[in-house]
Length: 235
Length: 235
DNA sequence: CTTCAGGTATAACAGGGTTATGGGATACTG
DNA sequence: CAGTATCCCATAACCCTGTTATACCTGAAG
View 1 (cartoon, each protein chain N blue to C red):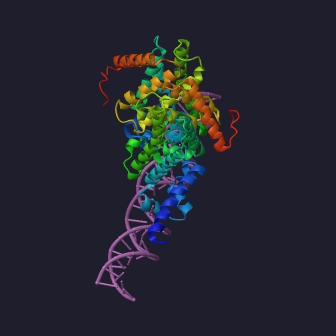
View 2: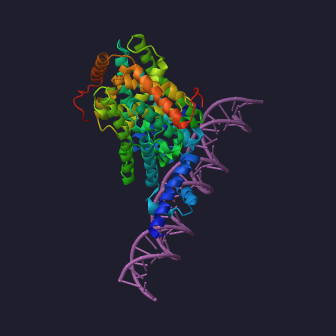
């Protein structure tokens, strides 16, 4: 193995260890000494590869955005773009529910050391990349929105603007649910998220009936994919 | 001054200093030594009054929720409940825009020390109180939603569920805007927040025309109260 | 006057991020 | 092949921050 690839290896392994320990042990696991011990190197590795802990945390945040993009990219397009939007919403929510600690860092909710108050504050290269990844995840929503407009389901408004509305609603729900509101398990999805999606779709031009059927279609697709029977609200 | 009131004084002054230094110098100002120096006491005061920094930060978060409730409570009821919801949205957004650092702590986005990943994790008494304050702020939205339903503007759905949808959309917008998306100044309000409000109102049962007029009414009321001419998107 | 309790200052401890230094391996260079 | 330069990393220390142990001081109660 060349030294270049060995070095990259350590860098990659540090980020991977950070994500893993973050999920297992929470934000307090994001410590230079713990990460170094986990990878089997000294804390200096953090500084030769990242320059400091904050840049490493930014890299973790970027990994979260990337993961979100990958999840959304795997939502397959059907001939019902509104149903696809519902599927994306479920996917977005599921990603956050499965790795809450990771996305808490990604969304800047949990910031060890008090850094990264806002994305605007980011001055590091990794920080800007993180913001860029966020926008890439956003484009998946934009495309589905554009298809909904083209299909006549939504009124012919600017697709970026409509998608930003959808993103706001979705992100707000996910954030508040992750903060403990809306109760545990599937309660939030059935009582808030799906009605919210129908509200948004209808507000953007869809009919209540068609939006409801799209929500049902997405629910059926979700069950088929996850194997979850989806009975009831609990767990 | 009795010793009891003197002691309370130090406790109150610590929280006040924390909020002030937080707004001025960012999250890194929330340090025991800095707060103690600012108030003119030793760091022990933090421990005699709060037991530790995390409880003091929880108190700051609680202050944010309380401030949010007070702001929303001051939105006066008119005979147009949908316009009142728009006014609350502007108020919510304005509160966060004016004290971004405070509300970053309140919403758990900036957590010095990596504590408080989610509200569910809160085990301290102050933490639970903070969650309670959040719900109290929520009730203001619930009441306006109930009035919109009573007025026939919204379909007769459960007001808590509809309000939760509105809260999700609003909170998501505010969060994403504070993270730097949606651009600076009033851009986000005019391009995203108001269209989002109209989308939500229409989706909940209102007509496009009436929702638009309510948005305009709220805008006029806002200008009258703040004295802002509100011309253009910039700054 | 004595005693006690609460609040505080002082000083130290513990555990983080960070850095100065030096060694060692690798890849150029003659 | 010898020399050298460069990159990566281990060691050890430094600094800062949260926290705690201890003693003092003040005021109230007996």
